[in-house]
Amino acid sequence: MEVATFVHEGLGNSSYIVDVGGGQAIVVDPNRTVRQHLQSAEGKGLTIAAVLETHVHADFVTGALEVKAATDAAIYCPKGSEVDYPHHPAGGGDKLRFGDADIEVVTAPGHTPEHIAYVVRAAGSEPVLFSGGSIIVGGAARTDLLTPELTDPLTRSQYQTLREGFRDLPDSTLVYPTHGSGSFCSAGDGGDRSSTLGEQRAINPAMSDMTEDEFVEWFPGTFPRVPEYYWRLRPLNQAGPRLRRDIAAPKTLDAHHFEAAGRRGMIVDVRTPEEHLAGHIPGSLSNPFRDVFGVWLGWLIELGTPLSFVCDGQPLEQVIDECLLVGHEELTAALEGGFAAWERAGLPVASDPYLTPADARKAILDGALVLDVREPDEWAVSRIENALHIPLGSLQDRLAELPRDRPVLAYCGAGQRSSSAASVLERAGIETVMSIRGGFSAWVDAGEPVVT
Figure (cartoon, rainbow, N blue to C red):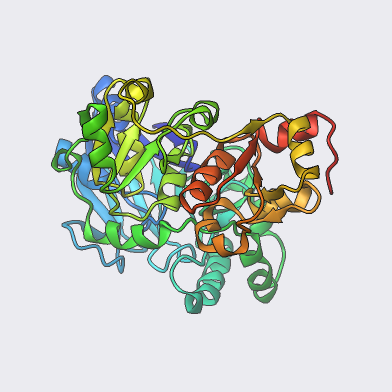
């Protein structure tokens, strides 16, 4: 039995194709970008027989319907998931068989009420547990993504799942979770994407010797912040997302037509922070294309907003993939010829100072307000003295805390998030916005003072 892993580093999530023998494969928790799964199966001469979902996802749009449309695979979703599209309900104790493998469904609530896991067994192989978020490497997935009233009972369910749900499985069981390091769904710090059940029983703090009440008091305090778009994706996944073939691709437009299209929504500049800050379309959002592009796109822009893109060499197809992955489907336009074409057309250009650490220190001495847009765990370790802390995802809602009568100097870890912050502040009418080139890392490397 061969397991192929597909990791989206920005989401911190994994999906899987399992060769179950007999020329068949199953796919576990695919995201919307399913080309990689289809190509892998085709390259190995496998027919995808089924898609197995462990839970209704909140951090990405499922690819189950895309796989079915391409292969006619059966879709299995947990009983009680309130999924509206055709599927086979799967519940604890159910037995499935594909190829030469037997699959047992295990009840595993906690991350969500309907959560299940799948144990796959085949001759000559150790049992394989596809655990979703019920066990991840070094932790378990968060339990607060439905309502505050459900957090406590779901946390208690997670405690029981971790201790009782897989009790009969041997230590040699291979564990392949959906969530992992880097996921805002996860509460765990394991860098590995897979493990064994024995290793997790020995080292996973969520499986350590504590009472249920102790777990309930401790576990929610380990969660990262929740990206805003998470609250909107669970209903979308329950309803069944549209197929990619039914979503219009953005049109490539010249500068003047692009300007008109951009006025109807948001222009997203995917270039580097250096490029954006040196010159950009006024009012555009800087979101440099990188692993976490989709996460921040979902966090900073309301779903349903028409989007136009300044790509400058970044393949548009990759940008589209990331947009669709987090539920953005109103993709209007791409700028033909890139930002240089905008400049040649004589259209308005804005810029923001991008300062070296030494120049940033001088700006602070001259009265600039220091704005730290990193996450709380980064802020807690060390920071620039007297900085105002507003994480990037909260900035739009806390603009009233920023003065309008002094420059703002934004910084993050390495410069990408502060570029986004600068564009948010510019749209809000703050006249002078500066960023630290290279972010807090560059500030530390330059020997500038920090508070720890």
